[in-house]
Image (cartoon, rainbow, N blue to C red; front, side, top):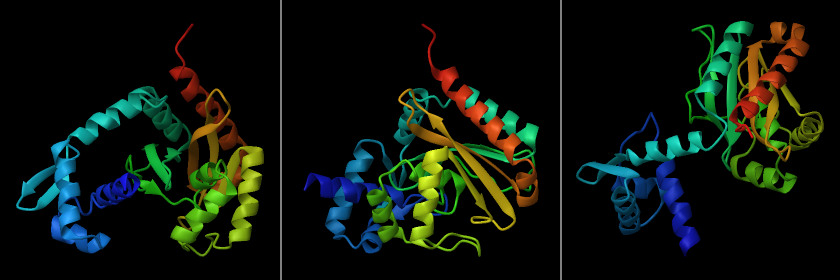
Length: 248
């Protein structure tokens, strides 16, 4: 019963996005196929602890307490203002898009992103990034047991974002085995046509990749400068963690 309530609560919170920032009880109940009374109880409880705020009638928005948890998460991890500076500097140095992402149990969530060119695609912090079709996603999915990946595929499928997106389970499995072995993931035009991406792990002390850093650039340029991009990506990933380790 408790786990069912937690699952429903998570699904309610997932509905609140930049595109749909406000929801009413009736609309949420219809979208999630829940009884209206159950939906009301969940949303009013979330409002009572500050995770939602009531706007008018039965309508709600995310509550300001979400920012408190966001701040606690960032301050308790190795991702801080220095991370943002390093990512921005690397983006400027390489004239490429640089992104740091982590796995949140359902997919890749953007922690920070920078671009030296205003025409480049920018990912907002907290936004989910494609898993199977991105280098970040492949790097992080490779850390999971294959049975867990299969469950994700059963639930979400392998959507074809471009003509190059991997939609074959066996091919993805082989890619993840290679990624886990080499600690590097590369994709060519799987998320955005004519754009390629290379990603490396950001490792904790137990050598487990808790996050990943990626560099994205036009395919021709990334192919030409692949080894350079790989070298600086790994160096930056190490420095992000080293900066967060307090001196003895």
